[in-house]
Length: 120
Image (cartoon, rainbow, N blue to C red; front, side):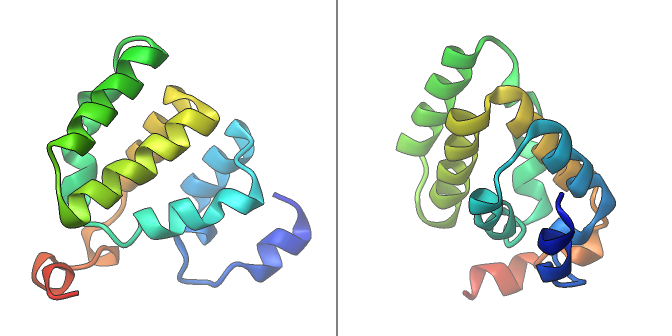
C-alpha cells in the first residue's frame, strides 16, 4: 500500500492488520474497494468459516455457486454473499479466498458477537 493509504487507515481497522495488508498488496485490491473489506469485517467469523470450501472449482463455478447461495439467503447473510461475489467478480476467486482466509484466522475477539450482530 502507498504511504498515504496507510496513514488514512484507522488503527482498529481490518485494513491495518498485517495479514490483510499483505493480501491487498499481493492481489492488487484497489483503494476504492477497501469499503468491501471493511464491511465484510462486520460479519461474524462463522460466516467466513462456512465459506472455506466455496472457492474450489473454476471462476465461473465459484460465481455460479455464490449467485445460487445469494438466491437462497436473506438479510445479513445475503449482504455478506453479495460482498464476496463483488470481490470475486472484480479480483477473482483466489483473492476472495485469500481474504476469506484472513477473516477465518482472525482472533474471535475482533468480530462482532453473534447476539450484537443480530440486534443491528
